[in-house]
Length: 162
Image (tube, rainbow, N blue to C red; front, side):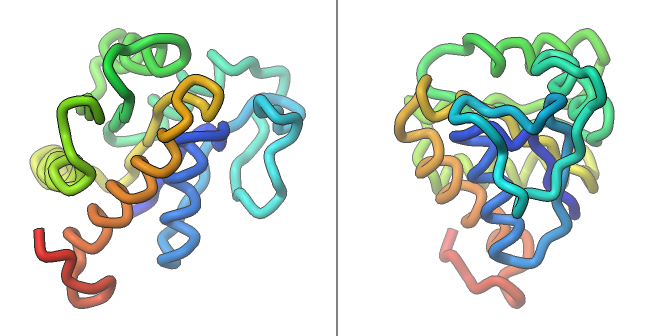
């Protein structure tokens, strides 16, 4: 399993932090200059710059380079998260919507696990709002993805009692 994202603050960053914490291969594409809403993506995140690429270009490349995308959001799709889902539809790529307004982190972890198994996902793209658009996005994303990782491999990562 490999987890990729655009490394933006919020849900994207949570996905990479879970992967790094558990020694899971991770990466993805980011805009030229390693830009994020706070300035620059820290070097500890193993994402590659898309030369002369915008945020939208980076989003499309991550959709293309993955076997499927999970979009974690709260209430309604908008901004970059909405663009991600649109790219999934245009590229005919599997995707799963995780609305944190309707699902607990535990239920989200199960839904992600079911999606990964159903579509035989090896490279999972994770997308969601940046921190300024959803203050709790990082926390929810981190918790759901950490439970998902344990759900996939309870012997290695611990039994989350899902």
